[in-house]
Length: 117
Image 1 (cartoon, helix red, strand yellow):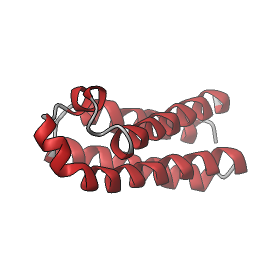
Image 2 (cartoon, rainbow, N blue to C red):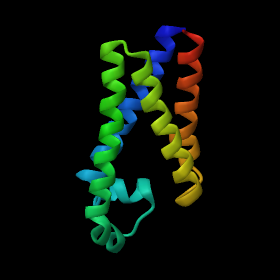
Image 3 (cartoon, rainbow, N blue to C red):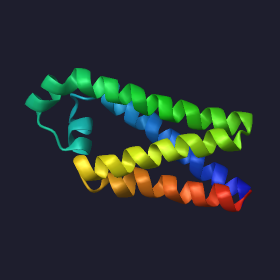
Image 4 (cartoon, rainbow, N blue to C red):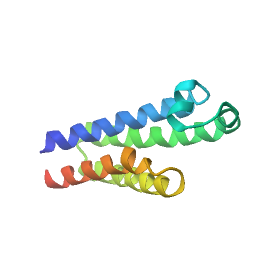
């Protein structure tokens, strides 16, 4: 169970690393605009905000990787809770699908992590 929990944590870290790249470096490209449902005008106007948001996603990814590399149970739990809260908040304030893309995987990883303890 521990291997599966860590695998899911790794996948979530990789997802947030990918989101960092989309938000910080590719925000005005067709790929990112498709992923986030934005127009070229909105993407251009919101690029600094998206880059800032991408940085936060990078911190989430870094924290999860830190937890994996250090074997820190509490570190993984903390950063998964951060991802979960961000996902729930995003689903309530931006678009509902964030609940399934971000919050649900974090909840699954948390459950697996707690069961592996």
